[in-house]
Image (cartoon, rainbow, N blue to C red; front, side, top):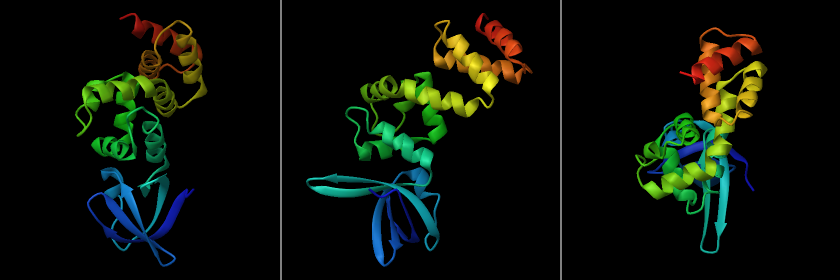
Length: 190
Protein backbone atom coordinates (compact mmCIF):
# COMPACT_ATOMS: atom_id res chain seq x y z
CA UNK A 1 0.00 0.00 0.00
CA UNK A 2 2.78 2.46 0.93
CA UNK A 3 5.94 2.23 -1.16
CA UNK A 4 7.94 4.79 0.82
CA UNK A 5 7.58 7.75 3.14
CA UNK A 6 9.44 11.04 2.85
CA UNK A 7 9.52 12.90 6.12
CA UNK A 8 11.44 14.13 9.11
CA UNK A 9 12.83 11.64 11.61
CA UNK A 10 11.39 12.70 14.95
CA UNK A 11 12.53 9.90 17.26
CA UNK A 12 14.54 6.67 17.31
CA UNK A 13 13.33 4.01 19.71
CA UNK A 14 14.73 0.52 20.29
CA UNK A 15 13.68 -1.07 17.00
CA UNK A 16 11.53 1.60 15.42
CA UNK A 17 11.60 5.10 14.04
CA UNK A 18 8.97 7.83 14.26
CA UNK A 19 8.76 9.63 10.91
CA UNK A 20 6.63 12.76 10.61
CA UNK A 21 5.04 13.33 7.23
CA UNK A 22 2.39 16.04 6.71
CA UNK A 23 1.64 16.29 10.41
CA UNK A 24 1.28 12.53 10.95
CA UNK A 25 3.84 10.56 12.95
CA UNK A 26 4.38 7.09 11.46
CA UNK A 27 5.78 4.37 13.71
CA UNK A 28 8.07 2.28 11.49
CA UNK A 29 9.73 -0.96 12.63
CA UNK A 30 13.28 -1.26 11.27
CA UNK A 31 16.33 -3.52 11.29
CA UNK A 32 19.56 -2.49 13.00
CA UNK A 33 21.06 -1.78 9.55
CA UNK A 34 18.37 0.80 8.80
CA UNK A 35 18.37 2.14 12.37
CA UNK A 36 21.99 3.30 12.12
CA UNK A 37 21.52 4.90 8.69
CA UNK A 38 19.45 7.83 9.99
CA UNK A 39 19.76 10.59 12.59
CA UNK A 40 17.04 12.42 14.50
CA UNK A 41 16.03 15.68 12.79
CA UNK A 42 17.11 14.44 9.37
CA UNK A 43 14.76 14.45 6.36
CA UNK A 44 14.61 10.83 5.24
CA UNK A 45 13.11 8.58 2.60
CA UNK A 46 12.25 5.18 4.00
CA UNK A 47 10.91 2.30 1.90
CA UNK A 48 7.98 0.63 3.61
CA UNK A 49 5.92 -2.53 3.82
CA UNK A 50 2.53 -2.55 5.55
CA UNK A 51 1.34 -5.64 7.42
CA UNK A 52 -2.37 -5.63 8.29
CA UNK A 53 -3.71 -8.43 10.45
CA UNK A 54 -6.94 -8.80 12.41
CA UNK A 55 -5.34 -7.70 15.66
CA UNK A 56 -2.50 -5.49 14.46
CA UNK A 57 -1.35 -3.09 11.75
CA UNK A 58 2.40 -2.51 11.49
CA UNK A 59 4.64 -0.59 9.13
CA UNK A 60 8.11 -1.94 8.41
CA UNK A 61 10.82 0.30 6.97
CA UNK A 62 14.08 -0.08 5.06
CA UNK A 63 16.80 2.37 4.11
CA UNK A 64 17.42 0.62 0.76
CA UNK A 65 15.34 -1.22 -1.81
CA UNK A 66 17.70 -4.20 -1.61
CA UNK A 67 16.94 -4.56 2.11
CA UNK A 68 13.20 -4.33 1.41
CA UNK A 69 13.49 -6.96 -1.33
CA UNK A 70 15.37 -9.32 0.99
CA UNK A 71 12.68 -8.76 3.64
CA UNK A 72 9.96 -9.64 1.11
CA UNK A 73 11.81 -12.84 0.25
CA UNK A 74 12.33 -13.78 3.88
CA UNK A 75 8.65 -13.47 4.75
CA UNK A 76 7.82 -15.99 2.00
CA UNK A 77 9.74 -18.65 3.94
CA UNK A 78 7.38 -20.80 5.99
CA UNK A 79 7.59 -19.94 9.67
CA UNK A 80 9.23 -16.54 9.09
CA UNK A 81 7.06 -13.56 9.92
CA UNK A 82 7.87 -9.87 9.55
CA UNK A 83 9.45 -9.52 13.02
CA UNK A 84 11.67 -12.59 12.48
CA UNK A 85 12.63 -11.26 9.04
CA UNK A 86 13.74 -8.00 10.69
CA UNK A 87 15.81 -10.00 13.18
CA UNK A 88 17.52 -11.82 10.31
CA UNK A 89 18.20 -8.52 8.53
CA UNK A 90 19.59 -7.10 11.79
CA UNK A 91 21.98 -10.02 12.18
CA UNK A 92 24.27 -9.23 9.24
CA UNK A 93 24.64 -7.01 6.19
CA UNK A 94 22.40 -7.66 3.18
CA UNK A 95 25.38 -8.70 1.05
CA UNK A 96 26.68 -11.15 3.66
CA UNK A 97 23.19 -12.57 4.13
CA UNK A 98 22.74 -13.06 0.39
CA UNK A 99 26.12 -14.76 0.01
CA UNK A 100 25.46 -17.03 3.02
CA UNK A 101 22.13 -18.11 1.54
CA UNK A 102 23.59 -18.55 -1.96
CA UNK A 103 26.42 -20.70 -0.57
CA UNK A 104 24.00 -22.75 1.49
CA UNK A 105 25.79 -21.70 4.69
CA UNK A 106 23.04 -22.32 7.23
CA UNK A 107 25.64 -22.40 10.03
CA UNK A 108 26.38 -18.70 9.44
CA UNK A 109 22.66 -17.94 9.68
CA UNK A 110 22.39 -19.70 13.05
CA UNK A 111 24.69 -17.02 14.48
CA UNK A 112 21.83 -14.56 14.12
CA UNK A 113 19.88 -14.12 17.37
CA UNK A 114 16.63 -16.10 17.25
CA UNK A 115 17.54 -18.22 14.21
CA UNK A 116 17.90 -21.89 15.02
CA UNK A 117 19.28 -24.69 12.88
CA UNK A 118 15.94 -25.68 11.34
CA UNK A 119 14.98 -22.09 10.53
CA UNK A 120 18.38 -21.44 8.95
CA UNK A 121 18.12 -24.59 6.84
CA UNK A 122 14.61 -23.63 5.75
CA UNK A 123 15.79 -20.14 4.71
CA UNK A 124 18.60 -21.65 2.65
CA UNK A 125 16.37 -24.30 1.10
CA UNK A 126 13.59 -21.91 0.10
CA UNK A 127 15.69 -18.91 -0.98
CA UNK A 128 18.95 -20.31 -2.34
CA UNK A 129 17.96 -20.31 -6.01
CA UNK A 130 16.36 -16.84 -5.88
CA UNK A 131 19.23 -15.25 -3.99
CA UNK A 132 21.92 -17.02 -6.06
CA UNK A 133 20.65 -15.26 -9.18
CA UNK A 134 20.98 -11.87 -7.47
CA UNK A 135 24.46 -12.64 -6.14
CA UNK A 136 25.63 -13.75 -9.59
CA UNK A 137 24.23 -10.64 -11.27
CA UNK A 138 25.74 -8.33 -8.66
CA UNK A 139 29.19 -9.90 -8.64
CA UNK A 140 29.45 -10.41 -12.39
CA UNK A 141 29.46 -7.24 -14.39
CA UNK A 142 29.58 -8.11 -18.09
CA UNK A 143 27.56 -10.24 -20.43
CA UNK A 144 30.58 -12.48 -21.15
CA UNK A 145 30.63 -13.58 -17.52
CA UNK A 146 26.89 -14.21 -17.47
CA UNK A 147 27.13 -16.24 -20.70
CA UNK A 148 29.87 -18.41 -19.20
CA UNK A 149 27.86 -18.97 -16.01
CA UNK A 150 24.93 -20.16 -18.13
CA UNK A 151 27.23 -22.50 -20.09
CA UNK A 152 28.70 -23.96 -16.90
CA UNK A 153 25.21 -24.41 -15.43
CA UNK A 154 24.41 -26.60 -18.46
CA UNK A 155 27.21 -28.92 -17.29
CA UNK A 156 25.26 -29.62 -14.12
CA UNK A 157 27.27 -27.47 -11.72
CA UNK A 158 25.63 -25.41 -8.97
CA UNK A 159 25.10 -21.72 -9.57
CA UNK A 160 27.47 -20.81 -6.80
CA UNK A 161 30.26 -23.06 -8.15
CA UNK A 162 29.82 -21.52 -11.59
CA UNK A 163 29.79 -17.98 -10.26
CA UNK A 164 32.89 -18.56 -8.12
CA UNK A 165 34.80 -20.15 -11.02
CA UNK A 166 33.92 -17.30 -13.38
CA UNK A 167 34.83 -14.67 -10.80
CA UNK A 168 38.22 -16.36 -10.25
CA UNK A 169 38.77 -16.49 -14.02
CA UNK A 170 38.00 -12.80 -14.49
CA UNK A 171 40.21 -11.82 -11.54
CA UNK A 172 43.07 -13.79 -13.10
CA UNK A 173 42.83 -11.66 -16.25
CA UNK A 174 40.51 -13.59 -18.59
CA UNK A 175 38.55 -11.21 -20.80
CA UNK A 176 36.96 -12.92 -23.78
CA UNK A 177 34.25 -15.54 -23.40
CA UNK A 178 36.64 -18.25 -24.57
CA UNK A 179 39.35 -17.22 -22.07
CA UNK A 180 36.81 -17.09 -19.23
CA UNK A 181 35.48 -20.56 -20.11
CA UNK A 182 38.99 -22.07 -20.21
CA UNK A 183 40.07 -20.44 -16.95
CA UNK A 184 36.78 -21.35 -15.24
CA UNK A 185 37.02 -25.00 -16.24
CA UNK A 186 40.65 -25.05 -15.13
CA UNK A 187 39.75 -23.68 -11.69
CA UNK A 188 36.89 -26.18 -11.34
CA UNK A 189 39.23 -29.10 -12.03
CA UNK A 190 41.62 -28.19 -9.18
